[in-house]
Image: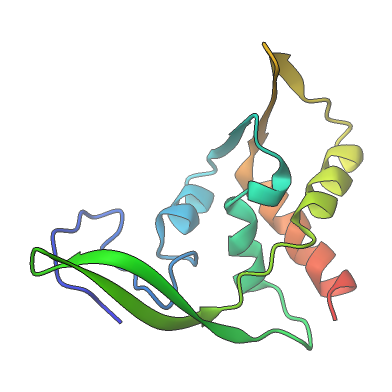
Length: 135
């Protein structure tokens, strides 16, 4: 479902149904070999891992109805759409396994744990992890 509005080149190809795929901002960050910065947030909140979900192939992969409040024609409306199920139950395990593999140690700023990782190898690792471990 495309919603008319002002869009820039970075989000022009992004639709509600495929909000975290190749043409999305997170997909474009992958193309640019960008980074993930988690400030006080665990991998269970790592949006970059959703890109891996779209790329991975496991037998139980399914869609679910999603929803979001949006401005449509200047009016706030609740929009629903079908998209990949947003299950993130294994994101923390994926992040921990990746950090072990690359021998990464997060640092701290004040009380916050900080992770600064290249996105592309993390997503590639997550695809392999999901292919091997998700049912």
